Image (cartoon, rainbow, N blue to C red; front, side, top):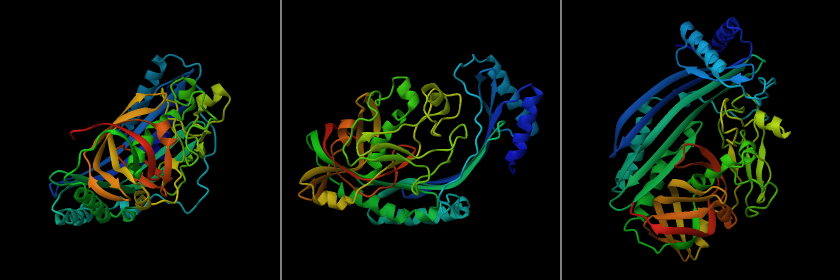
Length: 449
């Protein structure tokens, strides 16, 4: 069924006004996703899902709430508006709730940026199957077993409110992930891109197969502090854990490790981090959960904590300017950077290895959990390609480690950075990140995985 967001919005407004409500917001979200899954060197599943969701949020006498439906016929729209209004009227007033925003949403400054590619949205099961088959042949030729996914799709959203905001965005996305499994080792690689032709699944398969080959007959090393080379996926997995703290609401609530640290030099001078929705390696809408335009933020500049994300409500309470990073209301989290770009350097991973007398090369991390929220100490494990580096070369695979590591300490101990790339890791989000060479990374025990 074709979706007409303007027609849906028109009915939302009429139904709300019929109930005596003039202030209302609505979001129409669409998703058309297809997935080809493979294991044991064979495709075993192909699924596709198309969804459209309407979310309605009234504002009534300092109260707000939200109701959502995937029924978009006239009765479905009417019922979700009635439900949203009923829930709102039962909700306690929020003295800090602001009126709906009024603004003109401006587009990107770089008109060359395009993230909506019909070829990716229209990629069919046969096309994905042919690509997967080619990747599987790479793994099979190495005597290994492949498993993974190849997904393509398109998503979009339109946000309206009764104060005149009309914010729209759509993009396509392709993701390919592959694990190569051998008798006593494994290798992994993953990539994502708005245009599926920008992915190279065969190269990803070669990378995974090479890691599985190089890590066979893994050695068991003594836990301790090592010089570590973290590939971009591992940087994403670990450093990506800290950005919910770059939030004015979290700071105001006293739950951020940045409390009393804004303006301080917390990391090495090589560390500069921005939030930039229009960066070529990023994706996602250029507006937040209220339709406010996202601003570029410098979160960290040469190791110094500079800016944090700030939603409208917290901005009004603190006298700051909103940055366009708020989550859809109502929520308890406030806001967070969503398009993180960690600036890179000019040292390749190969050069990092060549300059390392003894260290550990890490492909990716998993089972990451926070141990100390103020010092940002995390624990987790290496996975799918952990290697010993000796005298400037990779000499063996090693048994996986558990680590216990402070991100503040880690980002203060950086020795080299590679150029930044769009990275995909264990987490569901992507960010732009370099590989990092870090001294004194703390491995606490050998795992049995």
